[in-house]
Figure 1 (cartoon, helix red, strand yellow):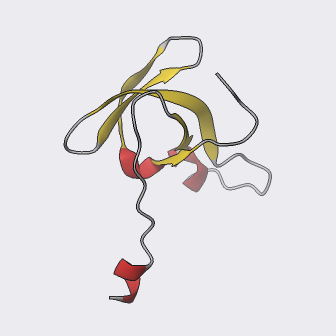
Figure 2 (tube, rainbow, N blue to C red):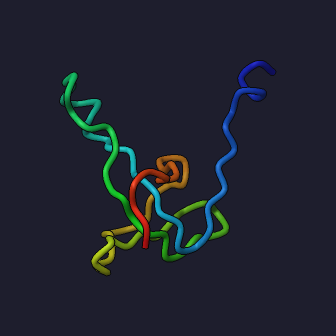
Length: 79
């Protein structure tokens, strides 16, 4: 019950700016290494929670990613 109370519910919409968690960070630890990649724009969201991303220049991100690997990007960038 404690764990369930502390889960952050994140809801995303199409055209939101997001950051993607870097899975390679666990393999190559380093204090100054970036944990997050991006920003990316959300192009499509499926019912199962998979998200199709697009880079800011319009190039599609290869494959779909799980929505739990994303966080909203709110600092310093306006489109």
